[in-house]
Picture: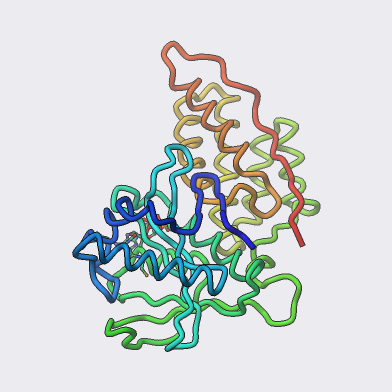
Length: 302
Ligand SMILES: CC(C)(COP(=O)(O)OP(=O)(O)OC[C@H]1O[C@@H](n2cnc3c(N)ncnc32)[C@H](O)[C@@H]1OP(=O)(O)O)[C@@H](O)C(=O)NCCC(=O)NCCS
């Protein structure tokens, strides 16, 4: 049974009793809880009761709402996970971040690993998410994950849009994983990889762009990040340092949203090298950057 999930920027684990105070900073915040049917917790005791319920749910089902920790600082920054809503007979995906962490792609990062865990580890067939129609950031996160609108409804007293995402029954591979699989062993993806590793960055960019044009999320944004990396090194070859920095920054902003490995590409080492490049190029006087990263292929578990 899984008890932690890691992404390139985050660690998720079940709530523990000692998390109450940290958790109250977001459960007690009216802005964060604006679109949660219960509204904000008005006392730390209320948050304590909430966490106890999540812990009970964890014991009963093996999953629940888990705490999100910033991997680098170890700081608690939000909660996300799956809850069985008995009354509606569905499993609900939720995600919530303390306000300083909004707008960095973290909800997408955390929600996408929960979707994969739901389908691949917990063998859940269908996920639901309820969102207030004015919660545009949350709607966008769900759209990026491939959730579709089912209907409008009043759920737990809240005017809601009901979203859902299904994995196909009776298949060893979930539909989510199939959607996420890009085949790097043939065609333009493979050619692009070959060009990238031989220093032909412009050509790599061209090959990947032809796949990107027809791709859907979440692969689309991932490819866009890789294309920007290739374009950045092309600029570097031509002596355009400002262009390199700007493209690497933008690529990092996209790639950082993905799990440690995505569609068979190791994301964490790539992001690490991009950071080292940025550090070197942005230092005055400029330091020499590390070697251009190799894109490591990792096996996709079946
Ligand atoms: C909803 C929430 C989790 C989003 O977290 P986040 O880390 O900022 O989300 P991400 O950065 O991964 O993605 C947000 C997306 O919404 C977009 N977005 C943000 N505000 C938006 C707005 N007002 N209108 C349209 N799109 C918006 C962002 O541009 C981004 O899309 P992009 O990647 O295509 O640019 C966060 O705002 C939060 O915790 N809110 C309070 C709790 C909550 O409402 N949880 C959801 C309950 S269903």
